[in-house]
Amino acid sequence: MKAITMATAAAVLCCFVLRAQGQQEFPPVSELPEVKTLPDPFAFFGSDKRVASQQDWAKRRDEMKAMVQFYEYGRGFPLPYNTIGQVTSTSERFNGKATYYEVDLSMGPDHVVKANLNYIVPTAGKGPYPVLILTSYMPNKTTITEKWIENVIDRGYVVAEWYCHQFNPDDSKGKKPGQVRAAYPDYDGSVLQEWSWGSSGVITYLSSLEQIDTGRIILSGNSRRGKTVLLTAVMDERVSLVVPSCSGCQGMPVFRFYGDKACTLSKPATVFPGWSNDRFKEFIDKETLLPFDQHFMAAMVAPRALLAIEGTKDNNANQEGSQISFVAARKVYDWLGVPDNIGWYEHDGPHGYFEDDVYTTLDFADKVFEGKNPVSGKRFDQLPYPPQDQLINWSAPENVH
Image (tube, rainbow, N blue to C red; front, side, top):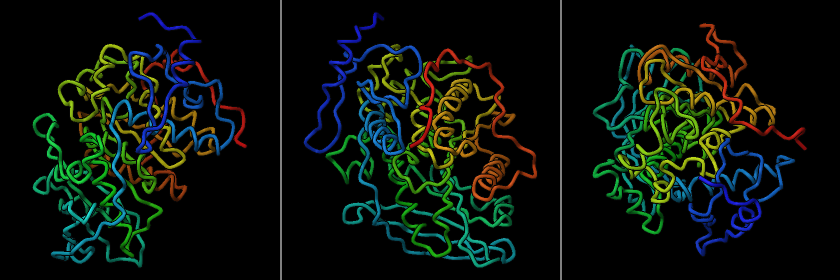
């Protein structure tokens, strides 16, 4: 595609306005300039200005957040800070090592959105405890009751599990609004935004419990749930550590580089159109028109922690694109002075978030929160794929002021 002139691009990009509802408006896709390299997260949109201070970064992050919602995920819903829960049952687990809770949740306008949550709390120690929040589809697919969870309890973690399909079942290719869009009819949030909102409702409830250390909230998810938790960490800064596993397109991997094992932008935009808004389809085979890429998502989590997990035998996840995203986002983490808060790890296996990945998550959490080197010897900076330095033609500002 022929790039438009810099003067025209600047004129176009400077012409965004604010909607009456307060949502930032950006140019139509057809008027965006072509950018073959990864867009610079430190460069303000449509301007020669670059980030020069942490205050600038906060403004730039807000702009990036508005941009990805406008072009990809749809407008996010107001976070559900009003979640309430009713414990419906409790039981002893693992020979008295833990107590298991089942809870009915309600949240949103007039508490019309309903869901379930299960969590398990160690009985040893006083707490508060860090919490590992697992993302599943439905309660009948729960993992929280499996025997290996005892090992997580022994490491001093609360484990919680929430179920994204309760907020939107993702049927009819996502065209049917779920509970969340029904509660907020004036918003155009995608299915991923509905699921993200649901996870925030879960975080609200868990944060109200005296057993929970709200400074160590870990949110993990695999595949489309990996996309969801990454989006949640962008939308909800209460997430202390996010772990998108095998998240594929619309997760960690960039769209401007597809490896041999790659889901391209066209797949979610056409096969799963409910995961994004209608504008996103306009970027099919035109990825270089994106004024962002998925490294923006990872960068917006900073300075909070992020661990991306991939699988060597995952045949549809674009592991190379995920590594590129990590390398690009790490420049933001480095600039903010927290280079160890972002990690990348590849398990030897297929698509999935497996038992050992949970232990890997805890190893990374111990490193980030407590400064412990993993006894397992696992590293979170081993990059097996060839570097693609030509995609990153920018560098971080010299100093943080």
